[in-house]
Length: 81
Image (cartoon, rainbow, N blue to C red; front, side, top):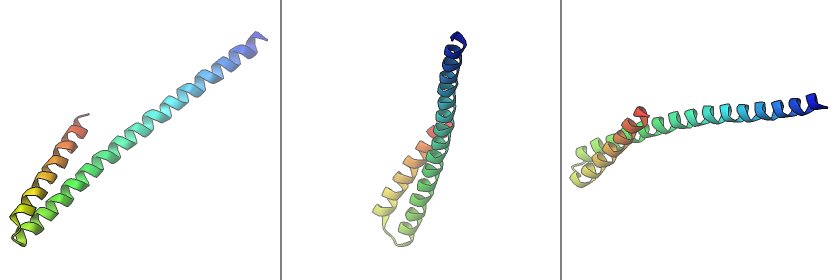
């Protein structure tokens, strides 16, 4: 009887450990996806800034440049962590 209790306890502890391992893996993947998203958005806003400059829309270009810079800063913070 006591060995059954230890087996159950061991299985519960192993299940909890496995859940945490999976959670860590998922968080790392999500962080990578977030960094990739910031990189994509910075590039997208940079492209829109260039298009605005070509079309002689300085207000649009200024806003696009600010957005691109914001996503670049988010990417830097993301990469540091």
